[in-house]
Length: 90
Image (cartoon, rainbow, N blue to C red; front, top):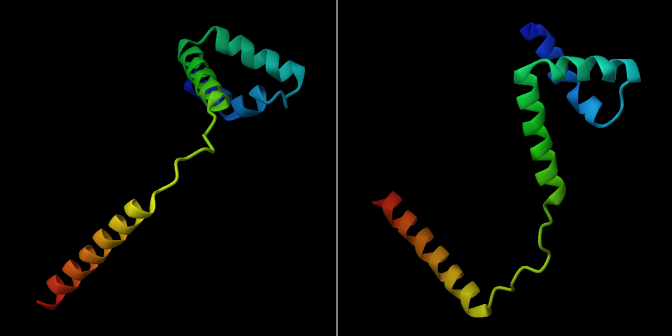
């Protein structure tokens, strides 16, 4: 198949995967994809990416930062600001 055909396929894949295309268009895409190794590879990669995205579940239960750690971070930040100021005044 021509590169132009592949580019047209890539441009329509999102609509295809979301089942937003007419049946005839889907059949054309499927026919091309079945007979085109680069498109097969791309579609398989896209399916894996979509699957990983759907499986991802961020945790809402992040551990709290202790007051001691917050204080330590604040002190380190203040030291960094002071070092910058001292370096710029020279």
